[in-house]
Amino acid sequence: MKPLNEVIAACPPSGIRRFFDIAAEMDDVISLGVGEPDFVTPWRIREAGIYALEHGYTTYTSNAGLPRLRELICADLAERYDARYSPATECLITTGVSEGLDLALRVLLNPGDEVIIPEPCYVAYEPCVAFAGGVPVRVPTSWEDGFAISAEVVAAAITPRTKAVLIGSPANPTGAVQPREALEALVRLAQEHDLYLISDEIYDRLTYTGAHTCLGALPGARERTVLLGGFSKAQAMTGWRVGWICAPEAVAELCVRVHQYTMLCAPHISQLAAVEALSAAEDDVTEMVADYDRRRRVFVKGLREIGLECPEPGGAFYAFPSIRSSGLDSETFAERLLKEQSVAVVPGSVFGPSGEGHIRCSYATALPLLEEALERMGRFLRSL
Ligand code: PLP
Image 1 (cartoon, rainbow, N blue to C red):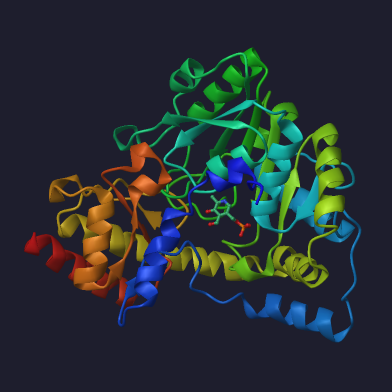
Image 2: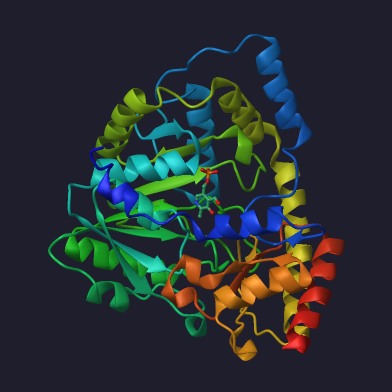
């Protein structure tokens, strides 16, 4: 048989999945592994989905997505961040941020173009760059600096082939929220070297210690930024598969071009549910965010009490404690913790080399389970 696509064949499966597979074989596992809300989608949003089904909204929509949803997304960005996008020409609805990321990369990259990715980062970034024909170039961040992106470190990685910088804030896996000054420095650098910025802001509503900075609203950023957002996290809508891209018209137009041939449109029912999410479910979001914040405080305090240093996670729903004091590497730590105490976490190394020495724990888990997980983790550490 002729060989399959060599870029895809060379890409290893996600390191997170391996732990799910082990955990699935075991009883009584407390999983802090998944990056998914433990809430079901708020009832009013589900009801909008049911209404859409009952009334037969089962067709395609326009390729770019329902105009009403695009209007709501742009109005929301304008209201919360003063980021201004035209719903008609600069916004499209995608099948989650996952598709948005893929579209952005395919539209921006020519074969061999380099994309700088500060890590530790979301596991899909590097593979998606490679699948789009680009070359991912990692740059480190460190917990000593709160995982802030350093413009100098990014600058040192720039070559004549650099096309874009891909960032996520608030971040998976660190929970770090990029300080405004770090983003401003990055924008200046992008202007100097004529780079695009891809900004994954899927966790934008999930911030606890300070305001989120929307990259599309920073002076000088808008014309070179592709902004990605969605409904999976804050609105607990992972399974509905709906997200969006806001970008300058030339980029948005080409994103629609790819989307119209590969996806046609995002699911109609999900788009109608997303309309409800943006027009009437803000109180539900606020309640969930407050709940995550309560869990965050309890969990981070608990980690520190059992002897794990943990930088304050300002956003998303992940804690990224250091496990260096255990003397184990993150892979061994996670594997032994799972086998010996039935707690599933993700080794930091799967998110990039700077993640080594850490584990990612999702606190989108009920408080009693978080407390039990802390007990077990404490027992594990004492046994070492
Ligand atoms: N971006 C980040 C940083 C994520 O953590 C995730 C999911 O875990 C996604 C994107 C995927 O989002 P979606 O469900 O909208 O495809």
